[in-house]
Length: 272
Ligand code: PLP
Image 1 (cartoon, helix red, strand yellow):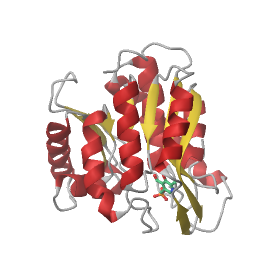
Image 2: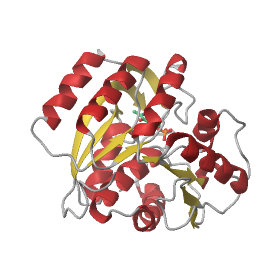
Image 3: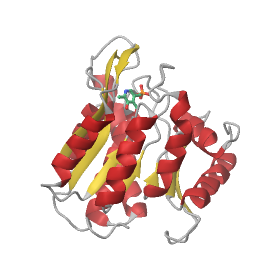
Image 4: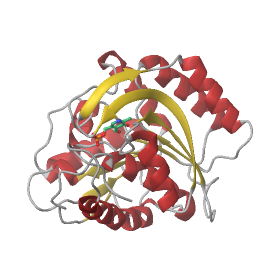
């Protein structure tokens, strides 16, 4: 439910995600995105990555018990209006997050089912994909890209928007969560996003927000920034459609502004 955190001027938003020391993705992007939307950002780190704009060199996942200690330290003291979940690393981490979510029941839970970075490096062990599926019913909103969506419903990666919406509907029906279907990986100059809900929690089954593709290779951290923004704005507005209509143009602006950054020689970060 989205009740507990609604209508706060400065929502308290916890990112449960991995660290990108080059600042473009992961909790570093989450905290910038939360701040850009007027939230108070917090971060419990699931995994450390050694990476830059060219790719991931290493991943270190600390013991899951220490993640639980971080999560409990925050929730024992601070009321959490929204949670954004990103990179999880392995099945033990997923289990720790699942147990904590069931105990604390935050008002807004956005889950970005991060599996593989754009560079091709794995951010979730393949053996943990089943465990990730088990976590999805605890989310209010799931934000897969097209490859993640296909994997989660056990289908082929869709090349058409209609096919993607159909998979989004299936994922929503299977999990009871609203699904944000993201058009960012479609071919062509249109880049729509849509909220899909099989359980009647939106005004319509599907809310499509159209958009134009921003031509840039600097898209590192786009998904992280988007899911953190959705969590923060939802805690303020309590309405996914209004939240997406606020966040989508902001993300397009962040992609456009990425051209003004000079960070790295690879797939550079979005700028917000
Ligand atoms: N690194 C971390 C810690 C992440 O959480 C993510 C994505 O969620 C990435 C890297 C991948 O970023 P991108 O695919 O935008 O390069």
